[in-house]
Amino acid sequence: MHTYHSPLDLVRERSPERPVALVRRGAVALAASWFQKHFKGDVLYAVKANPSPWVIKTLAESGITRFDVASIPEIELVAEHAPGAFMAFMHPVKSRRAISSAYFDHGVRTFSFDTHEELAKIVDATGQAKDLNLMVRLAVQAEGSSYPLAGKFGVEPHAAPDLLLAARRATQDLMGVAFHVGSQCMRPTAYQAAMAQASRALVRAGVFADVVDVGGGFPSIYPGMIPPALADYVDSIDRGFAEMMVHETTELWCEPGRALVAESSSVLAKVELRKGDALYLNDGSYGSLFDATHSKWPFPVKLVRGGEPSSAPLKPFRFYGPTCDSIDHMPGPFWLPEDVGEGDFIEIGMLGAYGVAMTTRFNGYGEMDAAEVDDAPMASMYGLAPRSIPVPRTESANVVKLSRAKGKRRRRK
Ligand SMILES: *Cc1c(COP(=O)(O)O)cnc(C)c1O
Image (tube, rainbow, N blue to C red; front, side):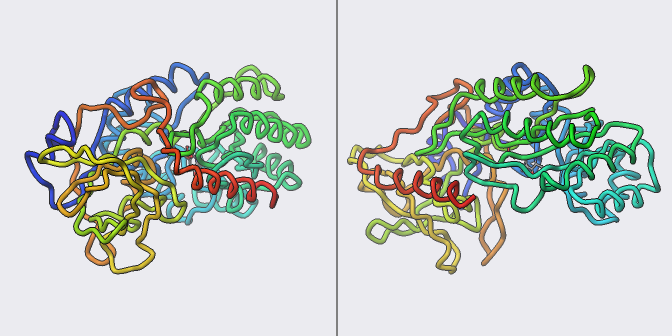
């Protein structure tokens, strides 16, 4: 991968025709060392957040050699780029063939499930293996998360004790509990609350867990979403673990995805046309801007112009992507100099998690290049850049909308 000092140097040297994923390895390395230093347990990277080979390699070089995988292609990817890594197959619903292949071809021993049927499938497909690490996925309350994940997976509290007991009986190796408080969790105490819930289920089942896996959900920074410090999250987990009924050798695991990679990549997109306040870009919701469309996240942006820099005042814009689908629209608002136009480039920040990983080939678009850059990300939880993204005053209408949407989601529970 070619390295440029800054996105501007890249634009001046190459004027790239396709969108470019701008890669900052140092940001992943720093996040990896933060988690290893401050989380008092094992850190598994959730591969789906960004499966780029450079991410897997950088994490392995930085000491994270455990991975949360959800499919055979993810297992093959990790095996190729982090040989010898420990993998946990944490998808609660898997095909029999995927389970067999994970166990027999790739040496995976750790599997999660949320039903008796899936547990039976795992035992069957591994030839009644006795060396399984069996992780029961619990449904937990997802207070304060921007992406609740409990709706699809997790055994409900009333059914959990029975499944925990079955798991305990099915293995001579580790039995654990796992949960996910929801992605981009804005409330550190969600972890402590989920751990209390896990503890109650274990007590009712009358079993001890060998592993407590607190999942992912650790946040990053987006406009209008400035999370508490990550230290508050590990503090909440420490308190939760201290209050749990566990034995001395019980292991603590976490599976961050977003927090390890979000700030490490941005995307450099080109303006193909301007119509009033709408900019038509060569990247969009079928590319790396899924969340800008479907969750209306107003990602931070910067104008990158090869010629004379703009000194025009900022004005709110919206984006359209390159496909012919009218869903391919990002409302923003994205604040850019009011003279932005065709031929300009725009750097869209904080797309390292669930951004560059989401690209499709719909309508003949979606091919991207990648280049390394040396400059800082637009915001950082780890001290590389400010811990907030300024929201222009006139944007307060949008911030109100965001918090109101969250309030509604909570009340519905
Ligand atoms: C997606 C996922 C993660 C990572 O979640 P983040 O919110 O990105 O930290 C961790 N564990 C499981 C089981 C997941 O599905």
